[in-house]
Image 1 (cartoon, rainbow, N blue to C red):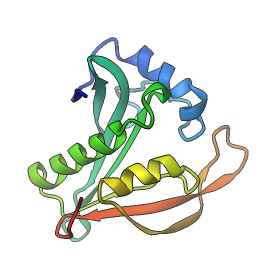
Image 2: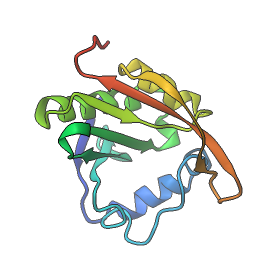
Image 3: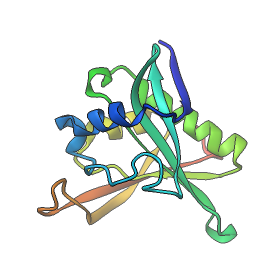
Length: 161
């Protein structure tokens, strides 16, 4: 299984928007804002995810630069056609490696919806631990209500799988 994290490039917009529009992904992610994926979240560092040469998703991280609170947060989405193959776990491991070994972070967080069990399993396989439930944390897709989020973290000094 060949997985690559690469810089976004022209032409990635339509495939990424198509993945985001799939029911399995749209359930957890909002419709992309204008400027996606280039300038809708300027604080994020983003990567295209390729599997066997095909674009299958996007990963991103943001960094808190304040020395007292320095850490990074990650997020990702994958095409449902590649769910359940360990790709998400491997992408998370690679992001953590970049953030800990190249960017000098000691703590990385991720905040999936508390009902996104598949994502939570993938993050736990990559070494993340549950911190707690954030009640009414995020608007539901479509903005009709709110759902809980699960705060998860990985501390670099702790043992990881």
